[in-house]
Image 1 (spheres, rainbow over the protein chains, first blue to last red):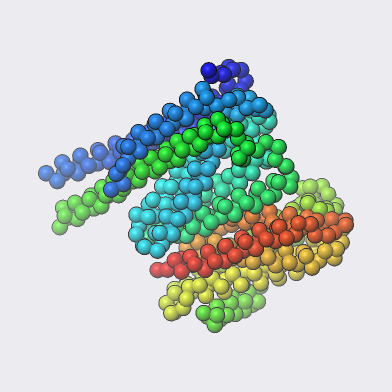
Image 2 (cartoon, rainbow over the protein chains, first blue to last red):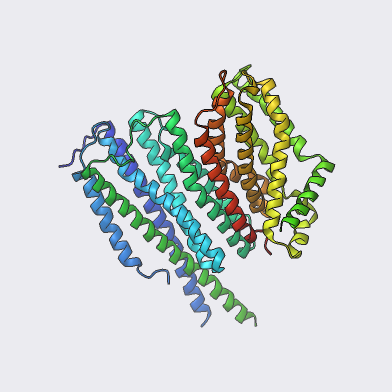
Length: 50
Length: 230
Length: 224
C-alpha cells in the first residue's frame, strides 16, 4: 500500500506534482479561452453575413 | 484536419496518466537512498526527455517546412517548440524542488540533464523575440525554421558536452536517470514516460487545432471585409 | 563559388583594414575584461581552470562584437540587395563571412593571448603552446561558423544587437566547455595536455555539424 509519509518529503513531492498539474491546467485554460474567442468571432461573422 | 484523432488521443492520455499515478504511488518501491523524494523523478525526468524530443522534433518539422515551403510545417514546428519550452519550465522547477529535497540546495550543478536543460532553455527562449521581431510572415516562418534546425542540432551536442564536463567535476554519485533501475521502478518510469509523451502529442494537436482555426477565421474575415468593401 | 566567396571576403577585409573598427574594438574589449577579472576575482595571477575559464569566456564575449557587426556594412548601405540580385550562391556569402570572422578572431587572439600571458597568467604560456594553438584554431572555427549563422539570422530583425548575444552565447556553450577543459591542463605550472583527444574530438564534431548545417541552411536566409 502507499507509503505516504506526510513529513518534509511529502511536501516537496506534492509540490512537484502540483507544479506539473498546474502547468497542464493553465495551458488548457489558455487554449479554452482562445477557442471561446474564435467561437464569438465566428458567431459575429455569421450574423454579419446575413 | 489537425483535430483528427484528438479525442482518442486525449482518452489514451488520461488512461496513461491515471495508470502512471497509480503505479508511482502504489506500486513503485521506495528508493533506498532518497526515500519518498525520489517520486519526483517520475515526473521530472519524463518531462525532460519529452521536452528534448519536442525540440528535436521541432527541428525536423522545420526541415520539412524549408524543403516543401508548406507553412503548415512551420506551424507544427512552432507549437512543438512552444510546448517544449513550457515543459522546460516544468523541468527546471521540478528539478529545483528535487534538488532542494535531495541535497538541500535549490540548484545543483551535478545533474547533467538539468544543467544542459538550463542552457537549452535559455537558447529556446530567444525563439519568441526572434520570431516576433520579423514582421513579414513568410520571412518570419523561414528564419524561425532555420533557428529551429540549428537549435535542434545543438540539443544533443550540448547534452554530450555538459555530460562530459560534469563527469570531470562532479562524478555522478546518483545515477537515477541511468539504466540501473530495478524492474518495478523501470516499469513505472516507462509508463510515466509514455503518459508524458501522449500528453505532449495531445496538447500539441489541441493547440494546432486552435491555432489553425484562428488562422482560418482571420482569412474568412478578410474575405468578408473585401466583399463588403467591393 | 570559391571565387565569389573570395571576392566578398576581400571586400570585407579591405573594409576592416580601412576603417579599423571591429578588430581593435574586440582587442581593447578583451584587455578591459582582463582588468575587470583582476579586480572582480581579486587575483594577481591565475592558473589551471581559472585561467582557462577567464581566457575563453573573455574571447566568447569579445566575439559578440564581431558577430554583431558582421553584416553591418551590408545593412547600413543596402549592400545585401546588391548581393542578392547577383546570381551567386548564397553559400558563398556564408563562407566569406565565416572566414572573415575567423580571421578577425585570429587577429584579436594575436594580441589577446600574449596579453593574457602577461597580465593574468601565472605559469608561462610557452609551456604547451602548440596544443594551445590547436585548441584556439578549432575553437575559432566553431565560433566563426555559428557566428556567421547567428549574424545572418539576426541581421534583418528589429532588435539585432539584443538577439545576437542571446542567440550566440548558449549556442557556444559546447565550444566553451571543450576549449576550457582542453586548455585547463595547458595553463598549469606543469603544463601538458590531458584528455586533449576527447575535447578536441567533441569540438571537431561540433565544428563539422555547424559548418554543414550552416552551409545547408544559409540559402534560406537573406532570401527575398
